Image (cartoon, rainbow, N blue to C red; front, side, top):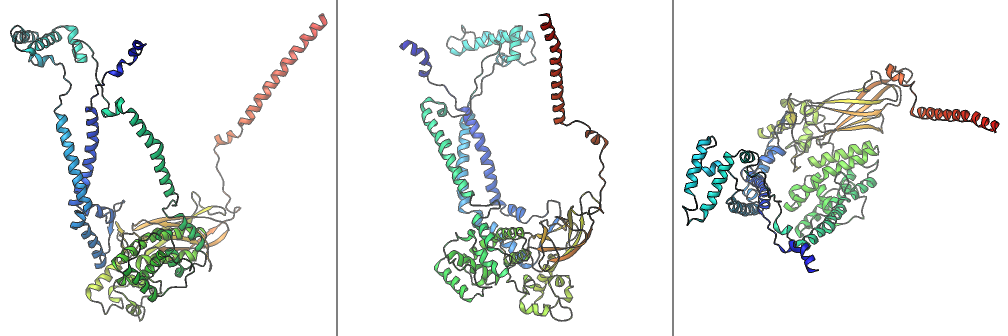
Length: 629
């Protein structure tokens, strides 16, 4: 019995001869690739700290090749330079994170070079080369081969080298090399397989360390892989799913969207929106304020004028109070009263509000609340520009302009009724700038040259049709031209002293019915920053006759640039706009072809008729048989 067992288990007793070289080469290649990429990132951050920032945040050209025009006022230039200085600062270039990464990189590179030096000394697989053994060239003829063989065999003959144990092995190689070059079969095998004896076995390794294929660690490896596959991966997926199911597809908390759906109504206006925004779930996890910050928040609560009485008075959490009064302080431009920690929180709130107000707009538009939609857009602009929503808010976007200057701007012979009028005026005609110095006036001139009012061209068409008929899906084709841009230019990031990030303006276009309570027929969002941009709004044409539709375009970043025009078109009745539909003769011929159902039924009828015919043929034969009987 033991002999029978030994027959099948003797291989287990032999120690595995496994070579780790393939694994080290494979693993080393991966490590070197990672180290090269990692080192490039660290070197770029240290030597060129602003290159990635400039390319991503302040590019020179658009995708279409247009030159991006940036605001050249001192505030925007200083804002950009402060960000660049922050990236170029010693603390940013040589932060603790960078130093730690450099130390890890140095350790990994040292280990990599050590492994390379260790395994680079390993000899490659020895190849049989008869020319090298006989010390002749590959172009040597038969006579040269024989001569070299005689000389080498005499030199390494074992009888002449009794004290050299390697001479015998060398002599055998010389004889084999001579045979490989003089014997036709041996030479043919050498040329084909690199061996005069014919094809030989080749050892192939796998890129795994020896302990993974060792039977000693099989149980441990199996348990470890089972733990990863059966427990760790499902656990990570469950944790990821539990986290992600809290968010909508746009990255907003579902609880925030549910709250917006309940809080936003047709009567929601600008004054209610700060409270609604402050109650968003995104702001529930704000850091706890210090005692000094609590004093500042309490002072703001006592001195800031609220737009209206709060509707959700049951929400008295500290995070709500902090968010709510920081928003009010931002809208009233009371930033100088905030501590650095509160300013940091406020910047995060304003940055997050961009995506939150987009969700508000989605809720409002889906319910056809146009006036609420315009109020949300006004609130969005106010958050970007730090405006309180007053009548003169549009002028307050310009640097150095206060209520005193606005009163002079809107009064007198060359008065500007709105921001667009002020921008379109010649510099010498602009009023309200008498108390400003030349540097401040040049900043206002830079602002007016950067902010671009628009011209609108629009028409109503039906795709692939000349006439517009009731029941068609109409398309309003919109062309927006930014008047202050030259050909080949594109508008740059929004001018805003109080928005601590990069944002490009967007235009929201709405097709509306006429009347005091307009209905939204359709809308589109235009976010291209080119000089000439296009958009389309599709809507269903339901009534015939002469129809006027209001086209309202709102800028989401600047107050005072909105425009509203009327789009006119004539829709014919179905009878008046009867269209002749051309049908190809081959398509008409298809109507005469039997359908699949008809084809199946005809086959069934043919089978039934053939069966009946066979029955009729069998009936006379049977009667004849009976008669003969």
